[in-house]
Image (cartoon, rainbow, N blue to C red):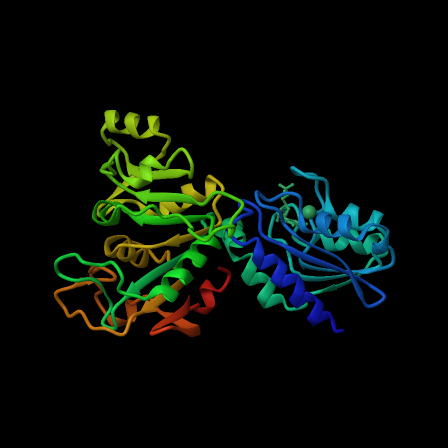
Length: 371
Ligand code: AOF
Ligand code: ZN
């Protein structure tokens, strides 16, 4: 079988860990010897052990003389675990096929160089684009100091998230809702605005049994600490992490009560709309998050879009029309000209029952392509 075929299998393994390995990227590794797959591994929940260690443990002596297919360049320094380069060399791996480079400043090509210096034949860049996509959150943290932000919207055909009376439950059908939970499961954190918390009292968990081994962080943007102590989010804060992004000068007693209930409070500078969301995203990266799913409502969506913080869109459309008096997916953000509108590129779409899910990526201009 070709290098690409084995790398595809390694990619499928890497995707299994998505949303569970932060602050580490999720990596997949397949070890092949004499045409037989002898080891498979992916980065464990929490980021350790690394994929290579898991695959080598499965292969044992059968790794000797074999080829390792790894979605990311192996690490070559002792962080929280020993370097994977040395493990691969000691196990007698003869050839390494690598997808993406590790953008971590201490690796960035040095892992490949170490393997080559030890006489391992290295082929780099196999299915590079797919392998880079899997580590895009981690790469953004390294390059821009903020996590990947995917905005999820579930709207009517005319882009409304609720009727004028505020009714918003069940716009989309069951299959779309299941897909939305799966989406949550592949992120490190779910982000919502306090307006949504007050209106819907959501729990923001991934309710698919057995999907996740690592906790999903719930983050609320709540400038003035209005999240109710009796909300589902606060009541479940002992079980699943709850972080609250608030502006400086918020009520001290409320801050104390929320912290006492188990929430982590993160203070941010204010901007005209509430908290400075760019600073908020940097704070989330500093606290170890790499992939964030923003779920609304319209104020948060507008804030993120206006600040240029939306890297991906997952847009569910239900086949109904609510009309202009309903709540828009994104509140106004004062565009002066169409040329300033945030632009996206459609990358995939699928039918889910009667609904449509479209995936978009931020439209990259040549100067923004590094991200
Ligand atoms: C790999 N395989 O499965 C992953 C890697 O803090 P540590 O010790 O866990 O190591 C962090 C480094 O390992 C950093 O460069 C990160 O990109 C890389 N992640 N490396 O060889 C893996 N998850
Ligand atoms: Zn490693």
